[in-house]
Length: 361
Image 1 (tube, rainbow, N blue to C red):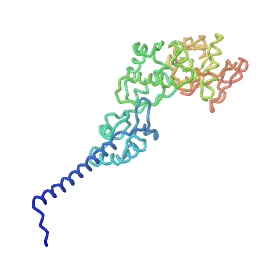
Image 2: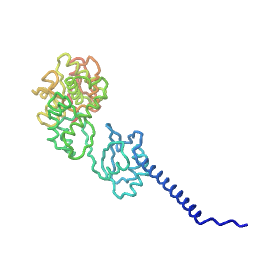
Image 3: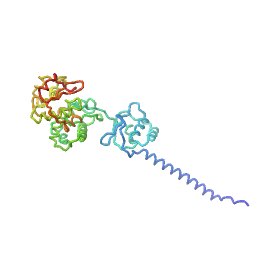
Image 4: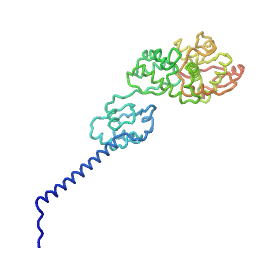
């Protein structure tokens, strides 16, 4: 006995169901794929890490990335993944393959977390390309202005005007006439033509951020006392060469101030010669130089000079908040090659050293 053939309507319904299931599975797979792609495109939940100087995490939720000249998009993606800035370099590669716009070499800073497309847009646009500028420890305000101007960040006169702006000084509660000493020496990244007042504020913000790292609650003291410490730190910065001697030097200066003795810092004489008289940096300070009549000359005038004489770094700042106690009242450079000083309790011991040296320009 033969079976009845299936009815035509039943076959059509079976085919319809099959295609509905097939399409449903396809849509589900597509949805999963889209979801997975979106997930991998978003920023990782874990905090990124610094790889090296070319890709590092900075304070304030910023990432610095150097795209090297001739570097491929694939190489950039691999570095971003290694630093934990993106979940998968494969997604980065797909974006690069389907977008014919090239990423541009240069220095970039961007906020994180950031998605892959957002990071790629920044590198393709090249609009956030930054200029690297290093302000060394111990430089003066005028030299700092020259450094940022030569880097193409802002005009020298605009920088100095901003550093002398009473509104900015009041904003940071700086008692002096300028921001000298409060602009932290460091490596910065700014756009060309960046506003001078913002450059000054950024450096001042960095100063107070680094100051907060020093033991002794330096941010809790009155502005006038902080100003006093910054002045001493600016002198220590220009005097020390070996970092381990900086706290001992700070202690010497406190000892002199306690008994009303002149600080007798060669660095202040150098400041008078170079910054006030406008002469070349001296290799040696002579007796005639120590007699120059100027309020910044601590051989002539006892107590502190009117303001800081340089931009102190972390070593000098830490030294004035954590000085080494001693009976020393004198020190003199005796080994220029190693930067070592001879510390003495009496003037007779002090004069045994033959020459006075200044810290290199």
